[in-house]
Length: 435
Ligand SMILES: *Cc1c(COP(=O)(O)O)cnc(C)c1O
Image 1 (tube, helix red, strand yellow):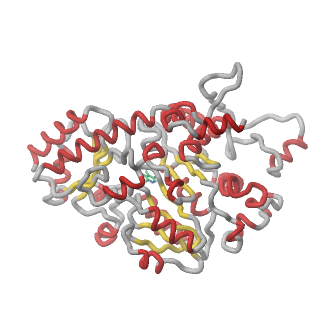
Image 2 (cartoon, helix red, strand yellow):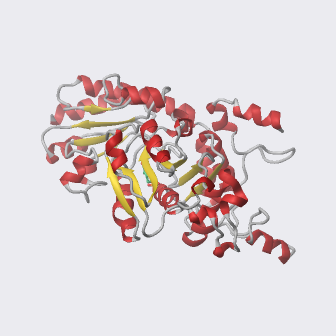
Image 3 (spheres, rainbow, N blue to C red):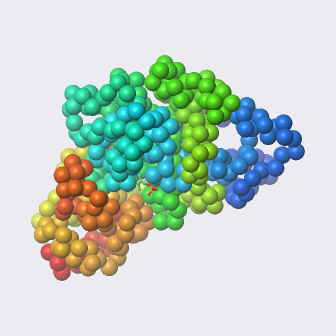
């Protein structure tokens, strides 16, 4: 068993993509089974009671857990190098659960302001309505500015490894040091680079979230999310800050998560036992299975997405009609050095660039594209393009847009798996017609 474990740890990410999560025993199906069942049958009500007490593990109702979902969560857990993981019905649910699992009314979060528009809204509007306050900081803030954002009631620090859509790279060292100095975990949304290109736990991040809707699914088929715990945060050492994990849960027969499940299992077990139970944001086993299939070629796909992203970014950067280009894989990019440090094998296939001439010009350029489609999506097999200031970020004021690194001229292009030459040709014909 120990040998087997060691062999698994030394495996490359490519192998884990293909074989992680599901090791069938003799005679079992090679591909994970889809357990499309809401409930699980037992012959003894005594055993059922133990399952409800969490004193025995097993399946009883798919809102809490399902074997297919668990297989796929295990694969993602292995990819990130974590100790426990959970699938959620969307990336939004993953980020909400990750924060709400350790924050209650009266608490406070420190968050990067360069984050996905939906997450910004979740933290800035909906969670405030629940009594959870937030101080936003720029990812490039000085250590002093970051320090000043903390309060005695701060419970977590949140950021994105590569920000959507500004493509800023988070300095894990700076954010982890500040979080740990204040005895709280650093939670990072690792959607854009995926664990193939970035493993935040190796740089002090405590909890990772994903919108699996993006590269992980990668084919525009299934909305989904995931939360992975590194198992490194010592809840008991900060028992007063996190009573939900370190004192008995009356709604679960007095279980104390950090005691019963240790640092490796407490966070995810509480997330399932309380948040899944009460909010029910579970993916269908069928969607989880599709995600599992698509994860098998994630490493291959990321390589191609990055190659295409680089080639297209270079083309845009070399064209004087384009005001500016952000792509952390580009040598001239402001975040190139940070990207090299935290994601040495590649970043992602997403590019942000500036189109001069105002809203009408931007819209005209997008309307002229033939291969690249206008879609509220990103990080997918098919190249797609979006004008955030006119769509996903339209609820933000011009000042907030600027703070979030989403200028009025910003266009987000997600390079798919097509030939880079074809993507470039499409952009060129549209630019020739409009700019
Ligand atoms: C899309 C996205 C989300 C939200 O995920 P959904 O699956 O759409 O709910 C969160 N974070 C990032 C970085 C995203 O790109």
